[in-house]
Image: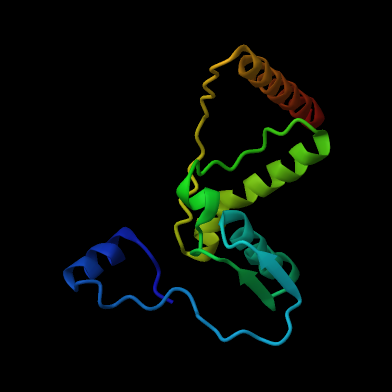
Length: 150
């Protein structure tokens, strides 16, 4: 497999990008799979990847009506967040979010993960109350995480 790099991109630009190999296979469907994932957006693809990497489960079908990496991750907000208000949900979402941090290096493919802040714009008093609740819950979770590590 060719490694992606700035040098490789520049080299291929001079060759009209004729030296790239196909990045994704297009296999015929099998009669049986160990796991079937519905949705080939960021979360579905990440799930398939980590099933293989961490558990050796590679007989996986990913069903998608659109394109690989599409869905919300590829077309809309591109937000992967862990600011959920229930403790069990927050823990699993934080673990999921953290897995994205090294995925580009693991796959030699830019998944375009770039941690940023978020601005929430409220238009009604109801939205303001909801966003304040989220902000307070996030601050409480950060404080609890710091205390757990101490």
